[in-house]
Length: 295
Image (tube, rainbow, N blue to C red; front, side):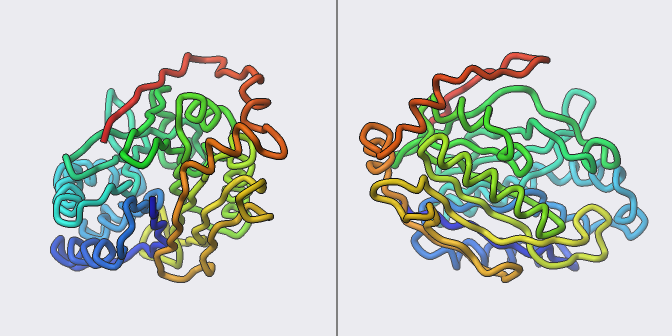
């Protein structure tokens, strides 16, 4: 399976057609990748289409964005039909049950297949932006190449989600992310590498890059994409399959050999996945449900 992780700048667009053409161009340039991942909150560039007054208000902008959610998803569904790819869409602040949640939609050749909500919220999301933790449900997406799950940005810094996803069959964890500083980006990448080692799986990080000073929500972005494995037999010694140049607009590609995951979990020089599965962890406030979604 070939994947492509975007290092994506938040753009400013004059109209909907300009935004749509930009996304189309990105997908066109993804070569023969089977699965594409866009970063967390890259959808916030749609705020550039709103009135200036709304653009400056953190909460008003996400209210207005929800009026464009169906149209946003229709663009990605159209692209998956045209290019026969699976797309992990830019995360979107979705209003549901009286609150906003940070949601990553997954679309495939058959249309919208499912989504994953972010569990753990940053201080900015929680204290300033008004975005809440999603329902404690984890989605395992099943493809012809293997199974994957999603751990959005801060979520990948904690072991529980990736552990449960991998125990439920996931061999790849996708981590869309949006961070302001090298420190923030480093926390995500350290978490991603730890999850790859603990679960003897692949972890792919996609991050926003560059500045969008017109936006109060995603004004400053520092990031780079990377695709990690466990540092064990059959994989790179440092567990790094590919890593992008920080702050550069680009796709990062890697070919993932799924049979290697099963082999290292059985016959690795260490058995991290088996040992990690022996650890019990849970959330104190709610149970976590796991659903399997066929793409």
